[in-house]
Length: 194
Image 1 (cartoon, rainbow, N blue to C red):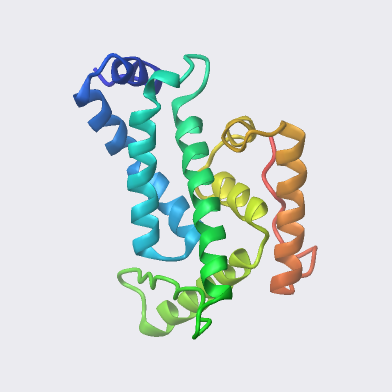
Image 2: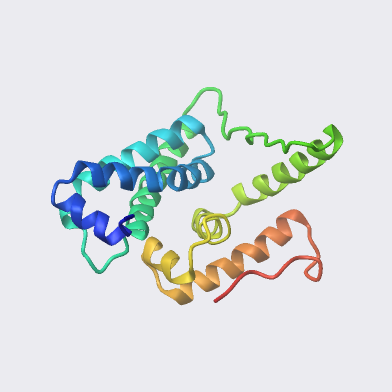
C-alpha cells in the first residue's frame, strides 16, 4: 500500500529511512524542475534539490502535521533558490566577465520532422526566455500552477502568502507574459483559476 505524504512525514519523523527514500523519490523530479526553472542552471538546480532534501531531513521534527508535506518541501526549495539567486546576482555584479543565464534545454519529440521540431523548440525558447524575465515571485507561482499543477491553495501554502495574493500575482504574471511575448489579449489563453 502506498502511503500518503502525511503518513510518510510521520514515519520520517519517527526515523524511518525507507519512508524518507520514498519521499525523495516522490518529489525529486518536481523539485528539480522548479529549481532549474528558478536558477536556469542544471548543476545549481541539482545542488538546490539535494540541499532541500538535506534541509527537510534535518527539519523533519519541526514539520507540523497540519501542513502539507509537498507544500512544505516546495517552500524550503523556494527559499533556497531565492538565496541562491541573490548570491548569484552578487557574484555576477562583481565578476570580471559578467556572464549570466543558461541555455534552454532542447526537447525533441519523436516522429516529428526536423522543421517541426525546430519551430517547436524556437517557441519553447521564446516562452522560456519570457518566463525568465518575470519577477521571481511571479515566475515561481506561474511554474507551480501551470507546470507542476498545484492548486491555488497549495501555492499559497508553499509561498507563505494568501490565496488572494496568489491569484493577483498569477494574473499579473500572465499579463506581463503577454506583453513580453507581444501576444494580443484576445489571442492569449486565459489563466487557470479555481
